Image (cartoon, rainbow, N blue to C red; front, side, top):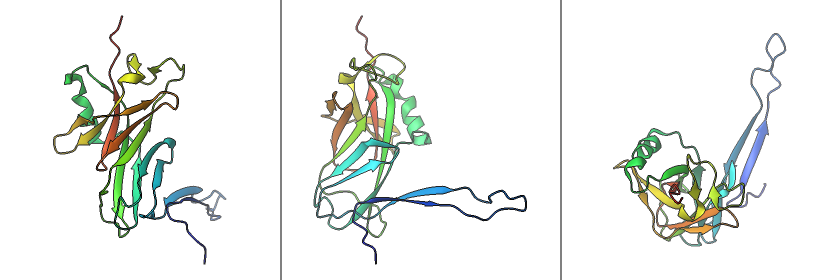
Length: 192
């Protein structure tokens, strides 16, 4: 039997040779990605498949048993849009630059939060290497970036203390005690 190393990501490509009466394929080719459970006794890193720099680092023994995470950087949900609508009222009017939705599960598929702090890392764009972030409506300094957690009950973003901005790798890291939806926000530069 094959060995499936814990914490690995696999992709399966499949296609069908079934065609209709005109010779056209009935179904298109598809690639499916999946991950196996992570070993709770070792440190693990989970990444967003579409953006490999977006990741979550989980220390060894953060869980009492094997676990897995689903990660997404899709920002179209109604809860995210609702929280974004309140950003203009916050001091400095922070701008939404991206999100990472982290859903943790135990090996049986039940929601499960870690017992130890983990690190969420979100990338940002600085194409000119000038310390200014691309993708916002205005000028945003990389040094003003911060990570915010979605308070789903109140439908608003809550700023997390102590982000680490790594300008060389263009990433912002944040220690978190629970998994949720985390946004990268930046304050528009008001310097003349």
